[in-house]
Length: 120
Image (tube, rainbow, N blue to C red; front, side, top):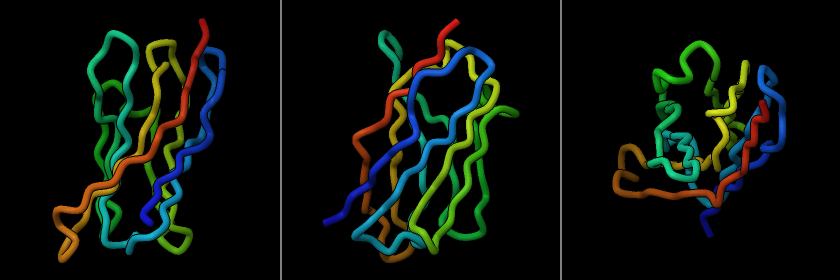
């Protein structure tokens, strides 16, 4: 069974850091691009960061550029989101999303999310 499990969320003060992890199982992880999304109360779901299945190319939302870094370790079936200089507006549930490449195009999986709360 395909599973994506996020971890690393918690409560931090403004300016602090957290590292989120997304561990995948049941899929050929290296053949999937991975996105981090977040959703806060009263806001639409936002794509925060993305990393490609090959080459590790990355993209970020303007709101997090320079503060967040997405990376992957295919040997560990894990994608990370390093979040620095956190702001209260970063408070949200963060979900990872794996999208298949090559033969796996059309495959799309989501984790249940991990809550990040940034206090003032």
